[in-house]
Image (tube, rainbow, N blue to C red; front, top):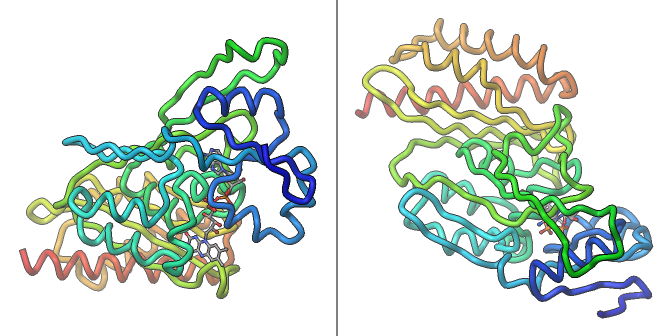
Length: 301
Ligand SMILES: Cc1cc2nc3c(=O)[nH]c(=O)nc-3n(C[C@H](O)[C@H](O)[C@H](O)COP(=O)(O)OP(=O)(O)OC[C@H]3O[C@@H](n4cnc5c(N)ncnc54)[C@H](O)[C@@H]3O)c2cc1C
């Protein structure tokens, strides 16, 4: 146990020690890369009087596993670690998109778990993982019986990344659970488009990130998976829009692009009520740009 300005920081060495630490200190905060925790105004170390539990010394959370179908990563793998592990299993555009997140010095600190679990900040990595249909293992710890620390039960659930958040983009499982692993489907041939405007550090109130994964089959898009994230205003995997995209035939004319923009506008107005007018306009622009890119891909087939 270490002391930082009188705030207890426990460093469990295994998952079972972690579950015991959480059970002993139910109000403590899990500390991954620390970039979010330490950048909150006045947050570290004064605000949390119940202490922090560091996840950095738990080997299981740093593991990387390659299989034919997916790449599995412990929640403490950093963005840089994800890049190092994924060069051959992710398609080039996905790899490039992940490599564009945050300055390189931060990519060595930001962990997958921290990026997915930050309370109300839906980062670029969330958006990418949501669009590429990644799922996360969340382990729920029973916290009500403090007496028996030797027999702690946990229940694991694999949850699609898109379902980790409520409609305002808030992480749903911050109270009684640890995100332990993430599985990313491995398909180096899939098409993927990623674009963003604004960032956490510049114009965050109007930031928009779009990630769009699809396969082109003759003149239509199959398996579209589409995510829009608005940093502090939510993250959306608009399934109705994905359904609409499946019905669209290529090549896309200007009038068809306008019709698609209209469909997206309708959905954004009804489902994404928190976002600003500027974010709505930008989301539509990013989608049209993405479809124009897909149109060029169609002509090159
Ligand atoms: C200057 C700056 C610029 C940035 N720019 C970008 C950017 O452009 N794009 C981008 O995507 N990100 C960016 N980030 C990173 C982003 O804002 C968060 O800081 C980061 O995703 C948090 O990851 P972390 O590993 O540091 O988590 P931490 O700060 O350690 O934790 C964040 C939260 O997640 C919880 N948590 C962590 N791990 C787990 C787990 N395994 N299970 C359950 N809960 C957990 C913690 O308790 C905490 O509440 C930037 C950060 C900074 C400081």
